[in-house]
Image 1 (cartoon, rainbow, N blue to C red):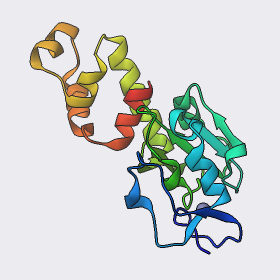
Image 2 (cartoon, protein in one colour):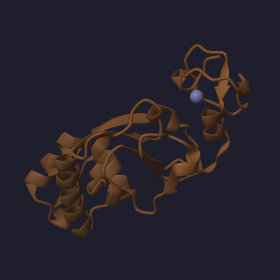
Image 3 (cartoon, protein in one colour):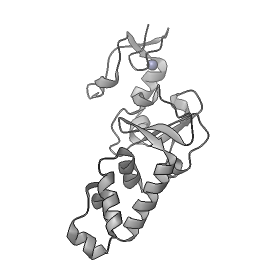
Image 4 (spheres, rainbow, N blue to C red):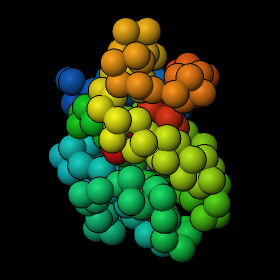
Length: 183
Ligand SMILES: [Zn+2]
């Protein structure tokens, strides 16, 4: 038998029956049913509703550690291997993306944000975090950081032109979005 989530073979598992509200079919693969490990993730609310880390080579629900400040972990990751899941919506099955994508390097590694797999470079996290903190301390709302500054707001908050340009360049960058949302 082969698992539709992780693709691994199993002896004891569960029928291929997904919850009615399951919307993440695009991440599944051909298989017979659901292995015990993946079934535990599928059924566990904390796998969707919290940001978490799993340390070590094995991705199992009992190793899941909720994170209160995931940005701290992103800025200063622990020794790999680890799997890092970040959520704001708290209802996506982003854990599926991490099954085959453990972080193996502290300087560049994948994370799941909702159901997006994002390649993280630690130097970029540090740079983005510095810029986000600076602009937030000048009074810039997160919406402006994500979607760009209106000229009137730039003048009112006295934002440097180079920072306005930097934000403009970062629009749509998934790692920038993660940093801003969790900053
Ligand atoms: Zn599985």
